[in-house]
Image: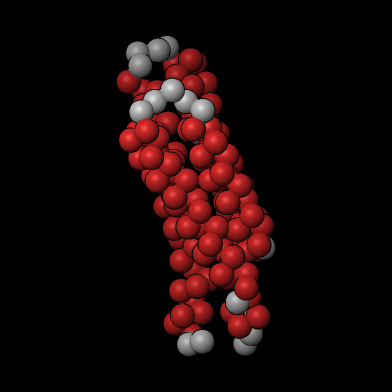
Length: 125
């Protein structure tokens, strides 16, 4: 394994996790257009940021222990899929939501799993 591929295998899931957390967190910005007072808006913002905070906690754990990232990102994706499938929306919207949110979570799980499986080569000096 080349030095470049080792660095890519180590840093890519971490960088994509940060981008994914920012993407999920951006959905919280819709609370500002609802015309509520300040305290209600702050409370709504905090509530809407809970998924991004959970994903941030997963990333913090995954940064050190890749296997935990693999398990928890896969679990987060599975929870989202189950949640979406329980909603009364059209199948096309369900598929779009699942691909947009659970898809990246599953991809990150696979990437952290690959990093964990190659951990001996990645951390060898």
